[in-house]
Amino acid sequence: MERFFILLVLVAAFSFSATAQSKVTLRGQVVCSVCWFEATDRKATKYGNEADVKCALDCSELNIPQALAVEDEKGFTLYTMEAGAFKPTGKDYLDLVPKFVEVEGTLRTEKDKKFIKVNALRVLSDGIPKPTPVSDTAELALKDLTGAAQSLAALKGRVVVLNFWATWCVPCRKEMPDLSAIQNDYAALGVQVVGAAGDDAADSAKVLSFIREYKVNFPVWIGATTDDMNRFGLGEVLPATAIIDKEGKIVWREIGIIKPDVLRKELDKLLLPKVTEATKIAKAERRKTNASLVPA
Image 1 (cartoon, one colour):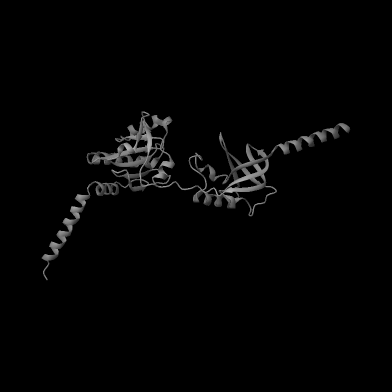
Image 2 (spheres, helix red, strand yellow):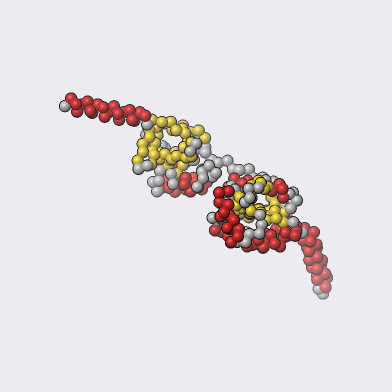
């Protein structure tokens, strides 16, 4: 009996020690434990935009819990949030999405998932991503498939059609023949089409295979990011295209697959303003002449 009592004391002492050791203070962002994974790289694509918040709301209605996304040198770890001494205002922590908070609580692990019981919580910031400033001046520096540095600054004096794409982007394949045709038809007028691929250097072989398959006849740079696209005012969805004039200013944008006729008209207006104006004047003169020939 005495040995059994000692064993109980040891077990209780061990349990108390384990619980004490699991007490932590973590800093991170309150996120939806499902929506968080809609982006493959959360360092590049910050969490907390309007779509993320809407997704968190929808998931909350399905009883999908929020989590604390904690970043360290290895990446992000998600801890599902459980009510402890700190009680949420609603059924869960939805009102804290996507804020950055400091949480004091205890940890547990269940089936390889990490949980934190929230005993105290302090809000650090609102967590809403600050929009990338959109500039009218086009600045982009990447590398080509040989590893050589390339930039839009080096193309100043030419009109550039900059197309953001990637080998894994299915819609991008549809517009490649049109972009190649524009390169053929407008090269003599000083137009240069440039493809900025979202693939990185490790995927150079895939990019080269894509170029050969789709007979791409313009320079392709690699390593473009969503930050680059946002800076051009093109969002984060591929494909997307911008026209940059001879002075390096962004003068036209298209999000989604290009409409070749529209793109050509924009280039014509930019490259042939005198011809366009002359055409307008000639049409106006014809209308005047025709009007004068009508009997009173």
